[in-house]
Image (cartoon, rainbow, N blue to C red; front, side, top):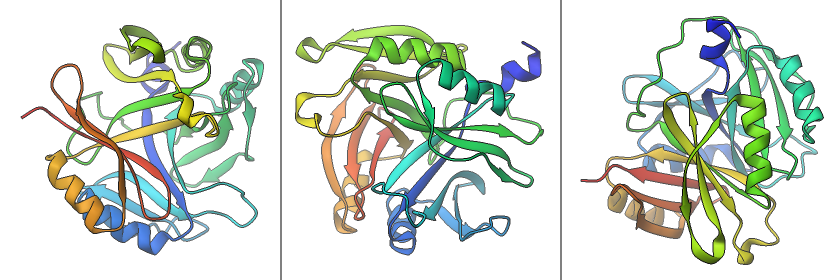
Length: 260
């Protein structure tokens, strides 16, 4: 693998909300997380960009296309050096494509896929550009990726082969099994675990955590703007605090604050 390819492979480069009410969702997230928003002129359909402080893009928002029978959800875009090769590898590893290849000028080629257990994600072959080096997430940026699935060891093997994500620390969660964390290079970027029994009817899914400065203030903003906190806030090993929530349209999202 070339140095350039290694810099791209397995990098979480974008997050995207597909929803039933983009205007309401835009108001909710700019208020709750503190992003600014603006339309993206380069899209063939209405598309809103979310930016953190410093005018740095972190994600996007769009209407769920007609005929796509999916509830509102956030999806991660993971970079690959060659989209066609990566899509073929997904098929070989037991996953499958959920969309055609989408080409956005100046952005790249992308495709919606699902892994062997059914969790949805995108791969993207970005247009060549200078990429900033990996760094700890800033306020407003995605800070953790979390897979809730039916077979964590198989999922870890899938993503290790596809994105070169490497299993690192694991935490015993008692009856719920192990929480398997994983790295991209030197940085720990996420974890995966068994879905709890009460989520038996929910398909496997990826949760994206966004960093905020104060988790308790975020709780109040979520509740005041029609969202719902479904789990937390709770302290995690190391002292940081996280929560899982649902926006007014029903999309799950998660927040993370550094320990005080």
